[in-house]
Amino acid sequence: MTDVTQSVPGLYDGVASSIAVVVLLLEFLMLRAAMLRAQVRLYAVQSFAVSLLAVAVAYGRDVPELYVLAALSFLLKAVAVPAVLLRLMRNADAEIAGSGVLGVASEVLVSIVVAGVGFFLVGQLGIESDVLPSAALSLSVAVVLVAFVLMIMRRDVVSQAVGFFSLENGVSLASLVVAAGMPLILEVAFLFDLLVAVVVFGVLMRLHHARTQSLSTEMLTRLRG
Amino acid sequence: MNLVLPLPLVQALQVLTIALGAPLVTGVIATAEGRLQGRRGPRLLQPYHDLAKLFGKESLAPTASGLFFVVAPFLALGCYLTVPLLIPVLTSYPLPLGDMGDILGGSFILSLGSFVVAVAAAETGDPYAQLGSSRSKTFGAITEPVMLLVVFTVAIVTGTDLPYVLGATVRSGPDQIVRPAHLLVSAALFMVILFETGRIPVEAHGSTTELGMIEEARTFEHSGPFLAALRWGSWVKQLVLFTIFLNVFVAPWGMSASARLGDVTLAMVALLAKALVLGLVIAVIDTSFAKLRLFKITEFVAAAFLLAVLGLFTLYLGGG
Image (cartoon, rainbow over all chains, first blue to last red):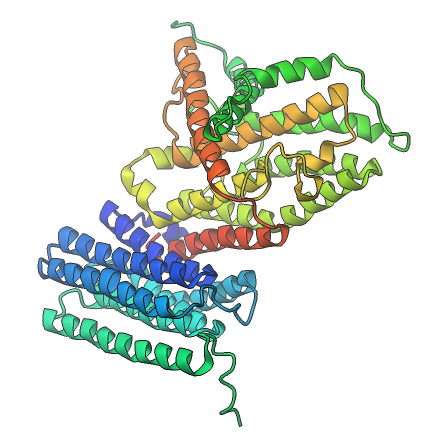
């Protein structure tokens, strides 16, 4: 307890962890969002927050190539991917996500527990980073885990796609912490991986909607043993 | 203006400022809401007129009710007026009675006040008053953990749970303000305040639909001076919560560092000005959101709980 009170983060660390916390909070908001479009918009805002964190790191720790990464990830994840998703959804007439397996309040409580497990497991590893406070790494793992909860609990294709994409946001947050100096070409390769995922999910959404006339996955029970 | 006031007098002034300023804050919020909704709204000083009118009226009590029904409104007002002794209202340094109770003690006294009102409402036998009292206790039971987590986080940040110390910590520099624990906990506290003061999205303030009421329904059977005390009490509670939010968490500036008359007067004005700004923010929230369905209130509280828990988590990880 005592060492907790003594370690006051500096201004830069405070800002960086606050942005990371915002990323996690947006993940929780996605869990609560009932409208499919709202969910996509939340994903856009979350991607923007991740890009903002990249800019903060680039500025605060003097890693200029991160500016490029921030600009690329903003264009791709905050503008292009949401635009594609919204366009795909224009054809489907579904507006409201089917209710999850649990009620919203219970979903949030489950996610708090899951996020807490992630937090403390990663905190135990004691990974120190010289660009970001280690809390940001725990936060990114929490983002990944809550994204899993989102994909498991929600029963519609859009939520699952958005859950998968936001999981990637968590991973890029983690990569900012662990390897901010990672070669740019690798980062860009990750981003284009995401594009492949968007295409796959787009095809999936269309196919699913054409077959079942809805975006809900509730009817996909035929393969059950 | 360099007259140095004795400390007990400053402490009494803290209580007086809250007691006399609370109707003004309520009046300003009501007027601002009226303007935002395209109405003219009541006069700014309308709450004072209301109090004067109600104190001059006769009071009736239901036949089945006992002594507690009569005592409760004043007991509650007394509880709410005790809290300003414990929290930094005008001064940035602790006053003599300020260490009687910590931030947890203050919130216990606030809950005692609302418990007393709920018991008095349950005593009346009026179904609406009883509905209000049972609802306010049900939801109170789920906001209380959020409040506790906020207090725990404060305790970890400062190493103590005296509200004066947290105010000083926040004043000490920008790094204390941007730390995630502080931001998250402040947001959680703000949501609790929205709940406790009966604002949208929890409850439509001053509405007349009994079925949507929580806090407001409890006063149905009281009349005359008793109703006046209840109303005044709820306004005082609102300003007390605003003061805790502002002077401890968000804006602990503009408080008097000495006991000089000039400084203390300036602090009074500053406190009311800050409370009015917060009131305007709340008026905007009141007019731009819809009231939640009763069963959605748990989701609202779950969100506040999430913020507080995250604040605690980040603190433990050392990044908070």
